[in-house]
Length: 488
Ligand code: ADP
Ligand code: MG
Image: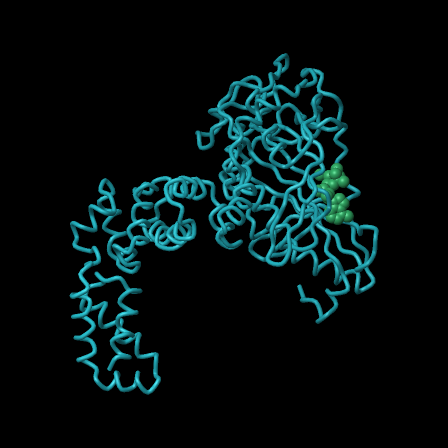
């Protein structure tokens, strides 16, 4: 693929709409009691229902409904109080019934929007609807030399499909939208959000148009993107490809495309002429699903605080920066830890700094998830208090006390600081002695200071820190040092 000649891309606007499938983390399947767990041996989680035997009847999983409603509420959708199921008919080896049960005209959630934050703007991406459906089985074409193998464990596992309006105008907006969806399903605990394992999958609909044009161009749909990075790559590739075709006088055919992660290119899977006619019709074996406001309120009352609400709280009530709030809310367990931490200290900025600095590097280095982090938020709050009250200096706290606390997580920061002799000595005589020694060691630097070279203060402070083993209050010492130097 040749890249666009400079400037040509600027004439065009990218238009993207996403269809995101999320596998709901229920224990059993959506229409049967088969286990929905991942990782069993082939065809261990099947029954007459998932095999589509004649005479079997589907029965709707309550929990799947609850999870879909939760996601709908989190995306500001209207919950459809009377929603219905439909059969989507097609033939495929991993679909033994010959149809998929899904929702067509009356999906469970309607409308809605998701707020995404980008470097230079925020934007509400409109949701068209969210519907419930069952997943198909899995065909494997590379396990046997002659035959394709079929595993029906996944057949009947509950999915929600989140369909957006064609609202995104850059690959970054699409990436942020998907990141936000993954964050939401994880906060809500309705899906593990793991794209590599296929729990979260994305189809990207992509078109281009001349800037200023009000109608949309023909779109192509890139199927089954299995990472956020590939969503980005596929969109960028399609933008260039489509613009190049139009610039060369060509026409965009409305095709379904595959994305090749090795080459970064798309290829035609189905053309519009071969488009499926699914012959949707109402599912006769399931009655319409009737919900009421009382049920919705009950679901609402079980929902956790969502990342956007936390973000707003952190940037307003707590006075943290957008960056800090973004990093802390990106991961649910991280945010939960921070919530406990700020319940135990009111130095919010210090709390954020500890979390994003020493704690994050420790977790990264040791490959520990924060949910397994030994240090309780209350202990860390004690450490922050020691620093704030001038009993331990910041460098000693992060480089000496913090690693020791992790090893001795049953002790308090104050206990351990005393035990390890890391408390700042309150004795001013000691501090003066360290200052005198440092000054005596570098007489020429004293002269430099007096000539106006204030930078040498750093050298003196370094020396004092070293000889005192950090057991001094740096601010007070700095003042004393200046006084001493100016008095000479
Ligand atoms: P279908 O029912 O054939 O899948 P829809 O009209 O429901 O088609 O749209 C499916 C997805 O395609 C939605 O996410 C929508 O936002 C997106 N979409 C529709 N038209 C365009 C377009 N011209 N460019 C980009 N995306 C589009
Ligand atoms: Mg579609």
